[in-house]
Amino acid sequence: MAHTDKYKILRAGISWSAFERFAVQGMQFVVFVFMARALSPTDYGLVGMLAFFIVISQLIAEGGLSQAIIRKLDRDEAELSTSFYVNIASGAILYLLLFAIAPLVAGFYGEPRLTGLLRVMALCIPIQSSLVVHRAVLTSRLDFKTQAKSTFVGTLTSGFAGIYMAYNGYGAWSIVCLQLTNQVFTAITLWLVTQWRPKLLFSAYAFRRLYGFGSKLLMSKVVDCLYNSFYVLAIGKVFSAYALGCYTNARQLGSMASENLTRIVNRAAFPMFCGYQDDTRKLCGMVSEYIRLSMFFIAPLMLGIAALAVPLTTALIGHQWLYTARLLRILCLYFLFFPLNSINFMILEIYGKGGLYLKLQVANVAVGLSLLAVTIPFGLSAVCVGLLGGTALNFTINAHLSGRHIGLDLLRQCRLILPTLIIAALMATAAFSVQLVAVGEWIQVGLGIAICLLTYGGLSMIFQTRVCVSVFNLLKSRQSLRDARS
Image (cartoon, rainbow, N blue to C red; front, side, top):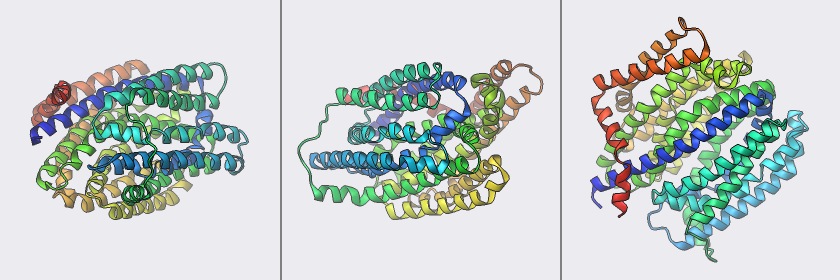
């Protein structure tokens, strides 16, 4: 297949992924708004205390096999079936372990309610582990439409269940029900709409080949997850469930834009980029385009949300979340670096540099934990500032060591994003100034969004014509995936 055809498929895959992801995320955001109005920060804090154990267990159950399957261009049925059985066994064992230690977790926090919450919420782990291979196969084919069907059903069903329980006084249990119901119906639907089925095959040799690469990614992701989850663990232990609830929702509001947009692009980009492992020049050009397009969307979103954090948060979910708005301003700047760090780690995955990937993750964690130790005595806002400083430093290190593999060093990456950051900063300044003259939260939000669109769109058309053309081409390319497959 010609380079231009592959690039069309990449753009179309990103377009499909974005279209489908935004539909689901929009629904999840509506559910979040309704539930946050009915629940308290303490309810979210209780569930947040369990995130450390759930997320780590989910990563270990996956075992890094998903990325290994996607990256391996000559994968066979023995490797897929072997990975499936390993994931299933890992998920079941980890659930039993969490079930057993649930009282210890509750004792650590001094919250007896956590025993039952953890034992029910941990059911998500074996359910999700049964879907790892299905998702990897579909992602390798850039088939995001099939994945969206299952995600949509899970989101819709769990949304009704969660809202019903939240408005009927179930508190933290409504959040657990939301997550578990989502996993159950997503799994049922994905099995129904996906053609792949595991066969009665198990190969120790196939497992060693996949795990040789996947284990390094697993260790790297576990280190990164331990780092992020340790913040939740420390905040819940040092401060309170209320403070943790405000922090977790601030992260959720910030990550809805940055992390989701980044993952939308990554889902389509990674399998495509892997096909250019031996063509550094073309890969460099595609990664450069990735960085420009990602920051074109994410920079105005993050800086715009930061500028309108207070009226936006209080208007959507109520004044009981005002502290969340203050933290959100800082965390939006933190999430601004997420796509940049993500693409630099993706470069290492493409070239199979699992060892360097792990070393960078360890260095990033060391920086973050040092800053946490310094900032936590000064309060939760200081902790968020430390997060921001840590991720900025980590980007500097990651870009220097990863970008050199394709000739895209730190300085070149900064040149790619600087024009977008300047325009987005001017836009955010204009939006923030609205709050000084306008009265009423919804009026401030409405005027602020209008000013953001006009300012950013106008300045981008004038000073970033090339990127705007790429964006317009991307928006028109959804049909090209169907054409390429026909």
